[in-house]
Amino acid sequence: MKINVLRTDLANAVSIVSRAVSNKASIPALEGLLIKAYGSKITISGYDLEIGINTSIDATISAQGEIVVSAKLFSEIVRKLPEEVVCIETDDRMITYITSGHADYQIVGMNSAEYPDLPEFEETEGFEIEGNVLKEMIRQTVYAVSDNNAKPIYTGSLFEIENKSFKIVAVDGYRMAIRQEAVDCDENTQFVVPGKTQQEVLKIVGNDEENVYVSVGQRHIMFKIGSYSVISRLIEGTFLDYNSTIPKTQKTEATVNTRLLINAVDRMSLLNGDKIQSPVRCNFVNGEIHFSCTSAIGKANDVISAPINGDDVEIGFNNRYLLDALRNIDADEVKITLNGGLSPMIIKPVQGDSFISLVVPMRLSNE
Image 1 (cartoon, rainbow, N blue to C red):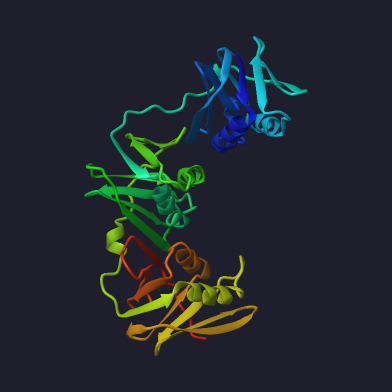
Image 2: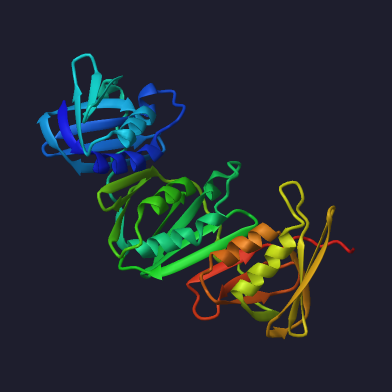
């Protein structure tokens, strides 16, 4: 193999694809990048047996071929090369020669036959969605994905399409986030996408309106994002019937300035830390929300004004879970609905229901 390629293009591609490379793999080749040079493009792939990322970039190819190179070493070399044009050449002994300006390297590569094939699957459903919309939907829900492998199904989010409405639902037992948008898809389907995969998609998708194509098979999903493809397994299992967990009645409703609410909860959070988790008390009464927190290191109190309709209620929350919901809602004002002190708090924008967040309360003890 012998190619010439622009360093900027190569560095950008390697940086993104390397995120799918395993740091400690039972198969040594999986700690590397697979580079294939055919026609007028080189294809670069990374794969850790759960998620794969690949892309193609333009190159001048003098001799076709394939090689696997250490992802970490190759990335560092490319990033620090002095000139814009990079020449990469391999020989029969799998030695890879990298030259740019006066700098040249010789590194040991591996036979591409040792690299496992990325999954290929037959598409059963597919749809297109604007990249910036998908990015916001993932960002506003992925925080509620569980990091506890005891129940693997909740380490991913439910992607549900029904009657041309696309929902992403994440739940970890303490909070739930639901985000929905209209989508041009006639299929009704649902599947569970790992949180890790969504995080990688989030990093690749830009802020423009370029469409992302989502291709779904029986056990795998592929996101086509510009020149990049992210391929991942789906999580098998039965996801929570999320509709049944949303309280159907409400006894208290408040409309609150989001920034004021975040700041008040944040002030109470100063008495909590990694080893201390005392609930933040929220007392909805007489057009005000009274906040308090008592922990081993002290006490704090605060009050903000808010229109409140319905019963007075006192309820407690994990400060981090409440802040996560508020910081991801992207609305100047939020509507909070409560059904007593033991039922989940519902947080959503004042207008519309494209985003709904539920936060399960903490049981309060009498002080």
